[in-house]
Length: 249
Length: 278
Ligand SMILES: Nc1ncnc2c1ncn2[C@@H]1O[C@H](COP(=O)(O)OP(=O)(O)O)[C@@H](O)[C@H]1O
Ligand SMILES: [Mg+2]
Image 1 (cartoon, rainbow over the protein chains, first blue to last red):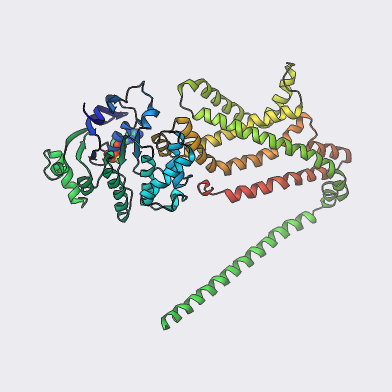
Image 2 (cartoon, each protein chain N blue to C red; image 1 turned 135 degrees about the horizontal axis):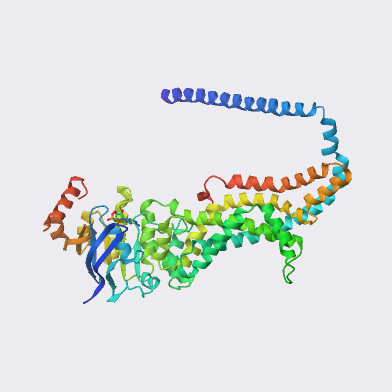
């Protein structure tokens, strides 16, 4: 095991009788971005939540920097502090300002003093084009602005890896670009990422690898140009042609 | 140019129509209020018993005489109300937190919380005042309070804590689970997520129903009169017995209204969705 930041091995997860993950294997090495694609309901969100220990997995293991994190004896809170997760629906804290959203984790989970946390928080918001919106509450921000606050919030704990769950799918089309720009920015600085996405052109541009999740397994993965243009598996081909018909590519 | 003029005419026409409709609405409201209120007043004032009722319920001289005593008694009600309210806000929150906790170690406490709520919400408040007020002193254990005001306050606190715990619990349950997920995802512990993310939203949401319960509490403070303390209702009752005149009770009623009506207006103001309340 070389420089893998995240390694998912044989992970299975069922909700009641519904088997969602049936043995997922996925490796993400440092500074690389993996685009996780798959039909709606295929388990992309579930996989990301399992990695961030928001769901208990049934079988298999997840490793972070070579250390198993899915062992029941492991302190989940300490692990989550080393990962960042951005939700599809933003999940910002509505009773807090943008800045308070960003600094909460730094102050309460990482013990950063308020002044320093706020300084960093402001810089982070500015970096994602939110200068001047620090004191706005989420419901005074557009969807694109909210999602950028959410990205800043997930990034503020300086995570080893960032998990992004369809960060643009709740947005109006004209707001997608600004959020993708934020992700591009993180990629440029070498952030290790797993990006669940429906934006194939974005996956092609920003991801080093595309992994296709189908019926609870990663059935095909590889460089984007290969997986997206010459898929080897019939399931992948069918999924991509359906996206093409829907005008999503 | 001509086009805007045409639109302006139509607009003036519409505004005039709207104004006349409004005026007509107000006139109808005024007339119907006058008819209903006047009708009831006429009915009461011309009833054969009215002169007696006026003398026994609305006697100005009795009012003037009894009001200072009733007001003094009411001060006790207000003090008790404030103390019980603070106790209830804290105890109710603690019970709600225990009942919503997930830690396996807290299971016995959770069970206790459920029993507490079932018990004290299920017993009529007046019965609880009797049981605590007469039952605890009857045990003759040293160290237990014997002051009827304290005992009455304990009974009211038990009853209202049970209600308020359920209000808090509903508020906590109404916060979307994505909020907890997001709090955990930034590295907070379960209790930090509760304190910094879930509770602040829950409390904002339940502020109107909580205030509503406090309007009820302010009235129910009068129940301690059955244990003997000289609070407003009790004093009014005694004065009524002395004078064979019910006016002191009216004085007490007015004092309760002086507190509960403003509280009710605050509830109205906050009403609707707690979501917008900041
Ligand atoms: N908490 C849950 N309880 C029960 N079923 C769930 C839960 N979360 C997800 N599922 C189910 O798991 C499947 C995968 O969901 P999800 O991971 O959200 O897929 P995706 O993100 O790829 O659209 C879906 O059928 C969904 O209904
Ligand atoms: Mg999803």
